[in-house]
Length: 171
Image (cartoon, rainbow, N blue to C red; front, side):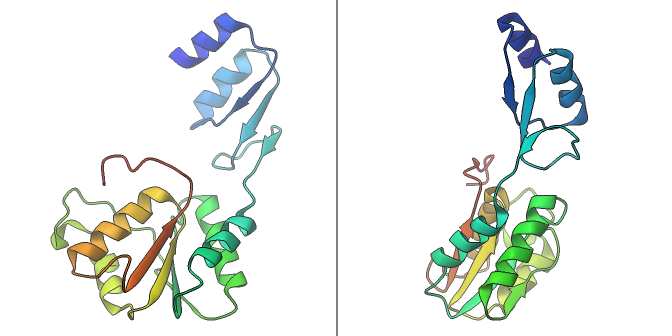
């Protein structure tokens, strides 16, 4: 809300915005300036620019090309997570081990502090597996969980995340 008030004082001719909620979209509309939204986290009927998720998956595949096996962990609660996973699996040209769920977040960095489903999945992954994680926050979580159970990262497991997000204190 304070950012929207500040924008209003500038009297913008137009905006490019990444709104986090429907309330932010409503506040931006209130400014009366044309707005183009970035991303597809919200169901918007407004003009927007989306990330090329197919290209994201291709870049991840390129980064993991040296690994004999591929795996994916996706934030299935977000449209981009599902799209990135689907493109990664579709473009891989070989079987991909899919975690198949959005990891739950736990507060500590001990083995008991991670989603037990994620820990069990990471324990079962063969060595020389490259893991594509559909956002950086979960990539850091996966890396910490793998190291907490004694997996060598980036040795036996490679992990690639995307978004260029900060890690919100997980690292």
